[in-house]
Image 1 (cartoon, each protein chain N blue to C red):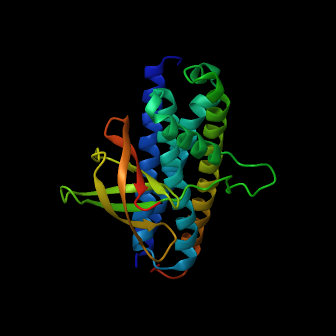
Image 2 (cartoon, helix red, strand yellow):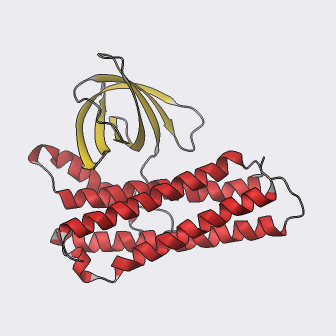
Length: 79
Length: 179
């Protein structure tokens, strides 16, 4: 079990990590020069892979924010 | 950015970011009992574990492969392909989901023990990721705990290849005995 303040803090840290991940992926997804270091047959798949990871990071951030809101709105103090 | 060294540095940041997230979410899961809170976190955790492995896989493409590693390279490519969503399928489902978990290995020759992450599992063997270089050609007794499976598996097999894909990060393959 964990109390509400501690859980809120941990979830906020998770949201920040996902926010940082989104920014990290965004640095290169739109940068064609980055993908030139890969073999020609791998470039498109690596670009799609990074785009999929970024999309998942955005989805995860939404999930974590929803969980955080649920915790904040709950009347109980133990989870 | 267009040099290989810069790309490597970037992918190492990605890997560090993914691992930090994996550990943080696992920290939350380990202390939460409420299933309505825990369940969505477990979904995110499974995705993050997969992300961490794929960051390493993408990096492995930068390293190129030696002739004897062609089979392993095919494995890398299949895993990378499996990341890409197929049209018409649910967003977080993949062509071929890697089977992830933990594998504890004990060498029959040296009795040394290793703990690694299982990246793929089939009837013939497993692919694993480890922070230690597991000796090749030794026979290992393996206890395999796959995420989401209540019972662990026990198999024995030979480590037939390893490769350092990042400083301190090794990929390897075990071929099970009797297959």
